[in-house]
Length: 102
Image (cartoon, rainbow, N blue to C red):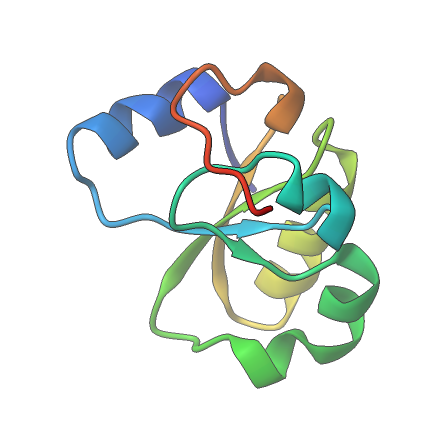
C-alpha cells in the first residue's frame, strides 16, 4: 500500500497535480472544513458502494480524520484492483487551504 502524508499531498495540490481526493469523514465534519475540490463519501457509504462511485483507471487519494479508516478503505480498493493512496496522517494534519460548506 502506498502512503503519503498531508505535507506530500499539499505539495501535489500546490503544483496542480490532478489528485482525486476522497474525504471519508461524515458529512457534518466535511461541511466544517475540507480540502477544496475533494469529494465527500462517508466511510459507511464508501465501504458498501465504492464500486458505484469509482473507476479502476483513476488513482484516488483517501483521507479521514486520523488515517485509520482511509487505510482500511485503500486496502479494500487495492484488493479489488483499484488504484488508491492512503493519506496516512489524516485531515487533522492538513495545513493547506480549507473550504467550508455553510
